[in-house]
Structures are given as structure tokens and as C-alpha cells.
Length: 591
Image (cartoon, rainbow, N blue to C red):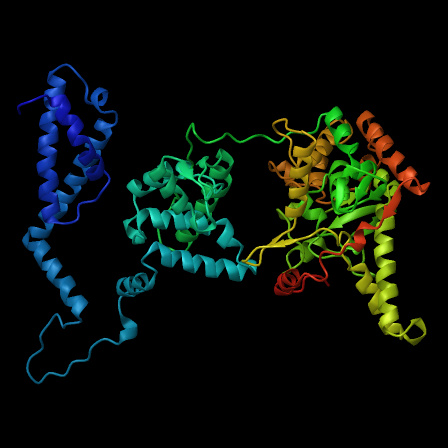
């Protein structure tokens, strides 16, 4: 071979990469591959003869060349067998079976009976079933979404899983499932970190594939409607890990479980130095927390619509309570948002939150079988089954008026319903009891607006997330790691300092799984009286300083120095038709 063998190796490399990852299609393809193998071998020999190693010239050459040899060898054996006399007979037999022909021609006049269709061979039956499977990846996605809608009761999978699967479909040009191999998986893993965020792009261009295509075409620099240059930013590592990888894993598990592909699932992890690293959430530092709790929402604001400006009103909004319940009880925002008045109940003679699959109905026994309730359809949404739990209500929340809020909502509902029925004197006992039960099922935070996605999925915590983002920016709380969840992390820090509380007890309180190992699976799954007592007595310097700020503002409202606004009257839920529709679709939401 004339010329520089090293340059020849570089020129052959793209073709070697493609062939090494593809199976032999037919005899003609086999001949082309063998010819290429001979050329590549000669180039490889000349490179080695020059004193260099192939992998030094082209990293990965050796591994790909071995794959090529193995696949060509396997295919050569198969082709040789097929071209033998025995192979030709076997191929003809398969053709006759496929056509349904008799393999033995009977004598003239003989009576024969063909086997009944029900007696066809298992191999034939299996083949028929495979033919009925969706052949394209897009068809498998449609089947997956139908299944998940039946299981989940909404189209949540369209938001959580479908976008990244659709990206793969678009990237691979909707392939036959059987054609998906290592080459396609590697291509997808290379493309995912290159997807930019939707910021700066019009709504019509926000699918993952369109974002990726525009970024590649424009080198991440676009021009917006005002003619300004906008630099597109790549998605974060958190998005790659939590949304893309998780979504693909869920979908591939479906494919494996339903015999579309063989397991195990590919490793869909991906990253690049251009993707922002995940920022670990952190707890509030003491001075940060006290600064936040000294803002107008907690100490006196302009009005219920201007809660971050200093004024003479005391508005204990949903955000006020969401922050404090996270700090003093450790509940997640999405759990707090779903509380009904009935979910404040007594346990061991003390007030607790009961976050359960269903709210307590009047007269329910506290010793209900929680496991049975947790498995029924409908009810509250939770991160995991371990989130369903009893949590002691810290005394400071009672002092600030949480129980008074619950009572005011119940009393107001009973008064309104009684008036609608013509007055108390006209109520039968049955109607009176029904009204009281309905009152207990009123939202504890009706002023907490809920967002409904087009899929019907309810986003419970979106409003509180938006409020936090606004407050964080307005009051310059920009330290990395600070987030809405920082309040919950702060509570975890509080209980970590309690030496008498075991790690297992802390996991129960936080709503985490108790079984990190086999021994951890033993013991009570709900909070004990002793654990509850420890949480109810929770106190430290930070909590004492918090209490002073918060109770001073409460005292000023009681003295008339601040004018009290009943924030719960700002009902964002009762007239929300989309919320009511979403709740109706969830089977038997509350008993």
C-alpha cells in the first residue's frame, strides 16, 4: 500500500466504527465487510511495522477491529452452513412451512386432513405475537402512555417520560425497535448534554429535538423577536440525571417487561463539562433564616397582594404557613398543600398533622389500618408510601394561630351552609351531621393556588415555589444551595441534634424509608408516643430567636397595632374549574 499508513488509518476509522457496531445483513454485505477487514488489517500491519500502535493513532481502534472480526466470523459460519446441502434443505423446509404447504405429497385418491389451526406449533404462535407488537419506537411510546394513564389516572407520564423518549424518536428518525443498538444509544448519550434550556426560545420551538437542532445550527447563539442576541444555556446535570435518565429508564423497563427488547436496560447516564453541576440543597444558616423571617410577610406588610412591602397588615398567607410548617415539622411543600381541616387530629393526646392517603372522616378511629388506606385508589399524592405519616404540630405553630385558622374555616363553612338551608331550626339531624363532615373536608390552605397541567396532573407546590423565588431574589438570598427545601433541611438539622432520637426515628419523621438494611425493616412504621414527645419539645437557640420575631408580630396584631387579614378567605380553589375536574378524575378523592 502506497502513502502514509497512519493517514490511511485515520481515513478508515469512521467506516470501522460503523461496521463494528452493525450486524451482517446478508451475503453481499458480508463480502464488503470482509474486503474492508482485509484492507484494515494491512493498514494496521504497516502502522505496527512503523513502530507505532493503532490505539495511539486512533484511540479505540483495537476494540472496534476485534468487534468487526468477531461479527464477520460469526456471519461467515452462518453463510457457509446455509450454502451447504443441509442448509439449503433446512431453508426450503422453512419456506414451505411459511407457505402452509404439505411437506409430503400423498398418493392420488388418498384422503388427508390438515392439522387444525389451534394445533400450530408454539414457534409459529410466538412469531405471530411478535408481528402484532408495535414495530416502531413511536408506537411503543403510545402503548406506554396508554398503560400509564390507566395506572396513574392522569397523563403525568406525558410530562415526565414522553419528552425525552420523543427526543430519541426524533433523533433516531423513529426506528424499528429491533434496529436500536449500541450505535443509537451512544448517539443519544452524546446528544442529551447538548440540549439547551427553553429560555429565549418561542413556544413553538421548545420540544427537546427542536431546541437541540437550533442549538447545533446556531452554535447556541440566537436572535430573539427584538433582534437581541441570546446565548442558549445547556440543561443542568440535575436535568440529565433526574429527568432524562430517569425517564428513559422508566420507558426501557416497560419495553423489557413487555418483551419489546431484551434486558438489561442500557446505561443512560450522560454528562459533559458544559452542563451546570447539580447544586446540593443546604439548610438555612441561622442569620439567613432570621433575616428571612424578619421580612414584611412575617412582621407586617402593605396588603395581602403586597406581602413583601412593609406595612400595617398581618397576613398569614399559605406561604407564611408553608415555610413555618417545613421549619418546625419537616413536611414537604406538596404534602402541606393537600391538607384538609380534618388532617389536624389528636394522637397521644396532642395535635398532629396526619398526612395519609385519605383525610380522616368524622368519627374515624385513630387506630385505622393505614396500610389498607394507602393502597386504595385516589386520595393524596405522595412522593413515596413512606410519606404517609403522623407528624407532631410544634407548639409554636399553635401559638401563631394554626389551629385557630382551622377552626375559623370550619365555623365559617357551617354558618354559610346552615344559612343556605334556611337556618339551624330547619336542619334535620342528618343534614346537620353532613354539613359538619363537609366542613372538616375543607382545604386548610384554600388561598394556596394549585396549577393543573394540560395532562390533568396537579402541581401542588408550584405556587409556593414561585413565591420563594421572588422572595429569594428580592432579599438577596443568593447563596448556592438555598432553596425552598432549605426549610425542610433546617428541620432535619434540628432533629439531628437530638441525641435521644435514633436514625430510624428521624427517617419516620421525615417520611423516608426505614429499611436501609434488613434489620431496619423491623419495628413500627409510624411515630411512637415517645418520638412524638421528643419532637413536641424541640427547642434550641435558633427556634427561640425565630419565636421572638414571629410572636412579637402576632402580639402586635392582637393589640391592634397590625390589622389582621384572614388570608384563608382569599379562596383560590373552590371556583377553580380545572382543579375540580382534576379532582373528580381521581377516584374517590376523600371518604
